[in-house]
Length: 79
Image (cartoon, rainbow, N blue to C red; front, top):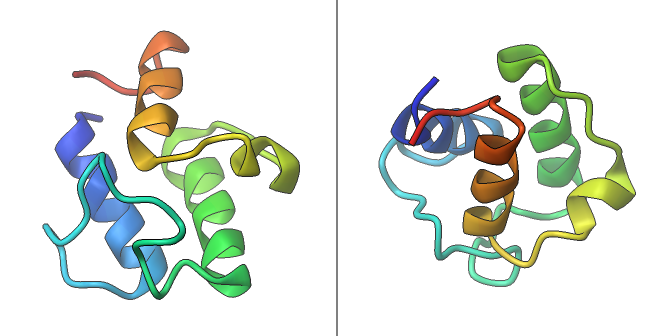
């Protein structure tokens, strides 16, 4: 999956319109990224990419861009 598709997966997980999230977004800039949204992201990572991430693992990333970079490094996403 390419990064753009992944951003749309995150939009879906957070109940946002496709194309509204960027790699610069953070939990503090996305109102829907609350505790329920956080769990939805974890589930989406597992379902869509087959990448298991726990709650603490996701909290380590300060932005979507950092998460994307890590997933690219793990060959779970294409740039």
